[in-house]
Structure formats: C-alpha cells, structure tokens
Length: 484
Image (spheres, one colour):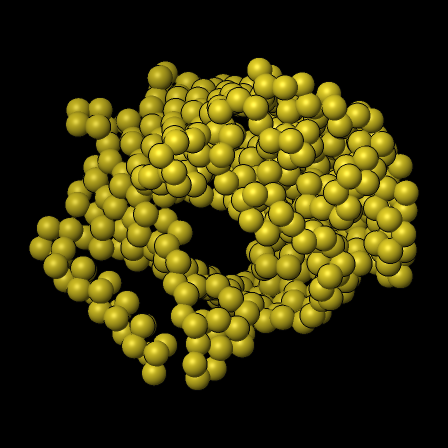
C-alpha cells in the first residue's frame, strides 16, 4: 500500500506539472533502466569489507569486520523530465531509484521507498548571444579528461551543484568552459555554535577547448577553497584530498587552497592511428603545517588503431608520483576529490561499466603506474560486440608511509589494501565484456572480470594479506539495459 501510494503521488505530480505547463511549456521525458544480477567473489581481495569512516570527526571501522554476500540482483531506474519554454530556456529534473531486489524500495509488500533527485538544473542561452549557454543547479560535472580514459582522475563521472558557462571564443576552434561548484556545505545556514567555522568546499574551474585539424587539446585549471570543518569524511573525500598528516592532526588554517593545472591531448592527424594523453599537476594546503601539504603529478597516454571494422586494438599506460617514507612532510600524491578514471572498461577501476554496482575493484591509479592493452569493439556478428582488456598496475608509494599510518591507526580508510599500492605490490586484471542489441534501445549485457593482487603482510597485517592469498577476485554480471 505504501509503495503504491508513493508512486501514485509521484505520477500525479509529474503529470500535473506537465498539464499545468502544457500551454506554454513543452515537456520532454527520457530515461533509462537496468536490471542485472552480479556474482562477485572476494570483494576487496579478501571477501571482507574495507575500512570506512563512521562520521565527520574521523572515527572509523576497520577492515575485515563483515563478510560478503556473493550474489545480488540490482535494479536502477532514472527518469529525466525537461520543461522546455523555448529553444533558449529549459529546466531539467532527474529522479532515480536504485537498490537490490529485496532491500529498501525493492522489498516485497512493505518497502522503505527511496526516490532521489540526481539532476535539477536551469539551462538557458543569453539573450542576443545564442551561443553562450548557462547551466545552474545540480548537474553532471567533470573536469576535463580524455574519453579514452573514461573520465577525470581528479573529479569526474558524478554530479555537483554548480554554475557553468559554455561560450565559443573562435568559431569551431576555441571555446571556454568556466564554472563554480559548491561541493560541500556541512552546516548550511547556521553553524553549530555562535562561533563561525569554515565548513565549505568550493571549486572554481576554467577550461579552454582547442580544436584544429587533426589535433585537439583542452588546457584547464581549477582552484578549490577547502574549509577546515567541511565534511570530507562523510563525503568520502578525505582519503583523496587530504594528506595523512591532515587526517591525523587536522588542518591548522581555517581555509586552504588546492589547485590543479593540466591539459588533455588528442592527435588524429595520423588517422586511423590516434593518440591520447593527459598531464596534470596539483597541490594543496601549501600554507598549512608541513604535514598537511599534498602535491603530485599524474600522466596517462593511449594509442588506438581504428582502421579495422571488426576490432579496435588499444594500448595504454599511466604514471603518478607516490608517497615517500614519511608522514611528517606531507603527501606526494596528486590531490583528488572524487575520481572516475579507467581505460578499456578495466575491472580494476570505476570507469565505464554499464552494470555499475559491484562492477570493479576500486583501485586508485594515483600513487601508481601501469600498462595495459585492449581489444575494443570486437564485432564479427551484427548487433554483438565485445571488449577484452588486460591491465597491470604497480605502486609508487614507499611501504614505510603506509606502514606507519597503519601502525598509528590500525586498519583505516585512508589507506586501503588493493586500492593503494606500495612499490612492492602489484595488481593484474582481465575483463571480457559483451553487449547484444536485442532492439535499438534494449540490450543484453554481460561483464566479467578477474583480478590478482600481491600484498605485503608487513604493511597490511598478516590477517588481511594472507586472506588475499586464499583466492583471486572475480565477477560475472548479466542483465538488461533499456533507454527511452
């Protein structure tokens, strides 16, 4: 009864808004759905949970306190409604339901209904300047990155409340993307006491996409103003943005600046041979105490050959600076906010998997280097294609840095076995993924993956490292995707 009532109310609201707006506004609806089962053995290489933050004070629960349930059935439905006043103005509302069968919204008879808003933005073109587009609100947002590597290693593949301006500067040659995003505002209108605290994380960014014959590049820069009391732990940003010293002792400044500068590159002048690369440097908290600083480099490159109809061979690699042996002099890794990076649909990374939940090992390319090869777009039968990818990854972090943090805190979320690798550790993964188009907008998808890891007992402890030796991680996911 409760579920029926909620859905009836939602349908009434959407159709009611559509009816009210009908005279002056066109309503366009699009969406997608996916239903799939996942069998995943040895999550996190152990079959146990990783450590996780309990609250924004930095309290945490260590790894290895929960065991995996290897089979789940996931369902996601998204509906996007565009309320279009004219060619220059529209509002987008996107809602989403996602859960496993038998849990939450998808529980039989007496569900706990949960419908979330994942897009809500106003988009318009400036009067008299039809080429300048402004988008304000909760929207998909990524810093510049090559599509070859899925998305940005700094912030990508997610959403943020932001104001973004797109404007051409030189027709078909140079454009500008500028914006502001409020990533975190922990206390909102009132701080918890009569003393004001810096509880926001704001980001300003600028990109200048350049397009020439046979060449594309997007130089870009971003600055984040990070308040000392922002909710980094609750948001899942602490391990990506802060140094280990900042996690241990906090930030001494009320606000710190983090900044990034980089560029994407795409060379197609030798088509069908195409080259891709990203170069990024980032640093943060440079005016804070020495242990709070974080700075580092990240470089990736890929090559593909697109001259064959039956497959596209690709090779790729990346390198990033890693931690030295000390926790007292700050971090030598590139600051991140929330990455979404990975070539070849690799099982190691959260990247382009269509069946997204329980889809990968969650490895972080920052603080590591790696090589890989992929056979993409394999297609010998109409409507059926495959991708086969091999990925090898090795750490650039000195064991001492991670070992000291683990000795101080025990098993903790800042460093995670399998996500963060030392110079003595490596990962090897293979994925083979298949997609068959049943109809133009309905597909059957199967994604498989296998991963092996070698880990140091002296860094992670005997219990976790020995458990990882009991068996490799692997998954098989199969399901249906529908777009309308």
